[in-house]
Image 1 (cartoon, rainbow, N blue to C red):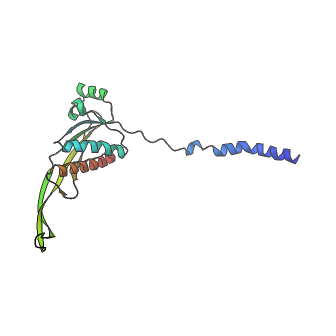
Image 2: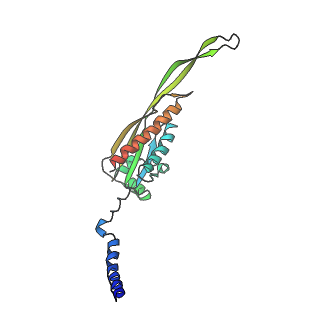
Image 3: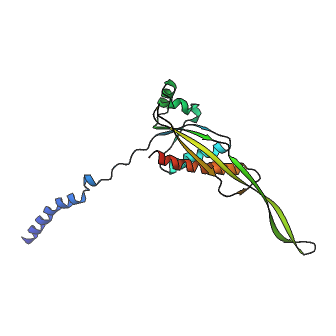
Length: 200
């Protein structure tokens, strides 16, 4: 008889345990806000800097949670046309649907050349005496200014993000193009950081 009573008590408690293990609907985490669909319409600038800027910009945007930006540069469209109400903009938005449309303008990078001498002590192979040898060291510093224009609805005022990228430390190089390219990549990182804040 005692065994039957215990079984009955256990059976009665099972529904209660089932309810306790089910999370309350009110405590469920809300769904994250959907990402905005972003379309890159055009990117202007000198090569090879613009070729280094755009891939880093698209990669950084994905890394920072903006999702994959659609690259529509080959469409030949201009952001100014999409910003204005009209047939051209409507056709583009139909072919490339998005919430945000971007245009990039990379200004010519500013390069500063630095030349100096580096000395080291070597031993003369003939006499064995120490000699001081100097080499000329050439380095470059670059600043690249970029403007990113943001268009949402047709007819709405465009927003502009302005950033300047730098190559950080002076790079020893035989040409200045690598310093410019590094500054362009830095500008891309800075532009995406501002874009994230602008789209919140």
